[in-house]
Length: 151
Image (cartoon, rainbow, N blue to C red; front, side):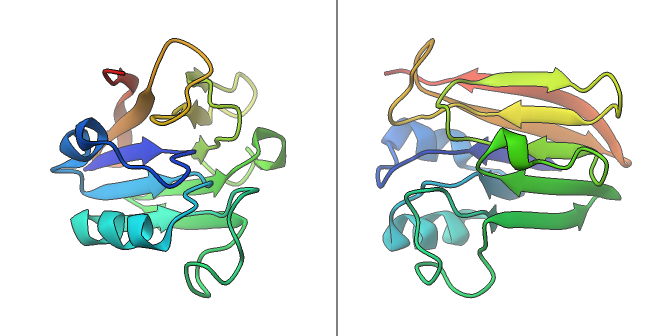
């Protein structure tokens, strides 16, 4: 399964980002989408999992999009929260955050949890526009990478 990870799109989905998302099984958005039409666009491309960011409103995307998104997929527990400091690494194998617009991927030494911030494809604060991609097979993380976009 291919999980494409985005955050902090702030109301703009570039053509390159949309091309890169084609073929994703699930799109995970870590908040600050800032656009109901972008929500509909992404939900039309693949299953969409999303949390609210500090620039999103509670009633903007429907009752199932909240500040903290937890789900179970491919026998792995996921948590998606805009702020890294609000992630609970004890309850998940994969933790996704956003907010800083700075991409990283790391594994927590204590819990073994994969933590990813995909950066921002719209307003990057380091390196350039980016997103993330996680490949899972047989309940195992095969790869986790930051994908750099042209910008």
